[in-house]
Image (cartoon, rainbow, N blue to C red; front, side):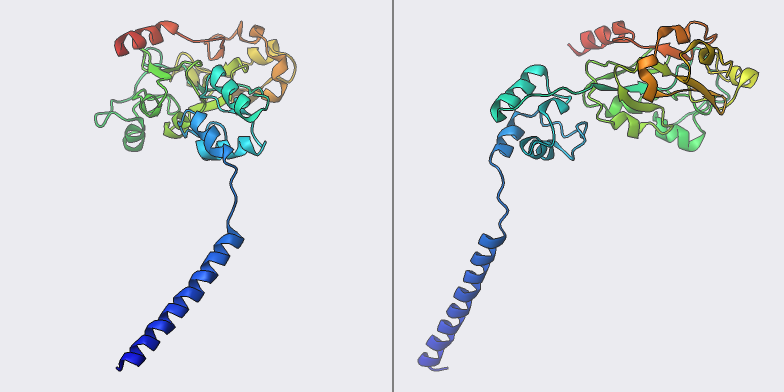
Length: 283
């Protein structure tokens, strides 16, 4: 190849590169998505838990939603009141108000009241025990007590009681849902904290058959249905079921004649001494 041909080839390649570069630059300018710089500002003020309790995919997605007015700062349940106020002040908006949700355990059948039909020996995991033997409890719906829920909780909101049941600290719980996913028996649910009337049982037996597998069981006696406001509680498949659409009718009177204690009225922190002990050990 002669020097002239070489120069021509280089010039052609350079021209092609210049043309393609111009096209890429124009396309980038045309299709570039502008992002409000305040998103990064809000993201920096968030706790960075990426727990999804707010309903968004993570903290950045939540920051975008807040900046766009689709979420209020208060919807982040991990932040404290001061942090929510900081986000609101940064954006010049109202912090809003969120109904706090917490995880509730639908089982009161600890090892002290629920007999075992066999013993599980293996990896100490509810998921493993449920897969191998069903866990060994006579009640197939009962909590297995191997603390999968407490292990996955990033907020130290769950501790195990001496009877093998997990206890949730509502002050620490962010309703992230990790415990809901971790429980192989589906015994955790997220509900507003002001839903104080809770059936801590998922048993589908009734009468003596139910009481044979746990002494703290809903035995379908129907007393709660009779004592509660009309329509608040009904008996479905032998299990007391609360209509939370009528939760304004809830009243502690509904649990007064429950012979087993399967229905509870929850106010504040249950068994606070457990969390005092856990905090002392952590310190």
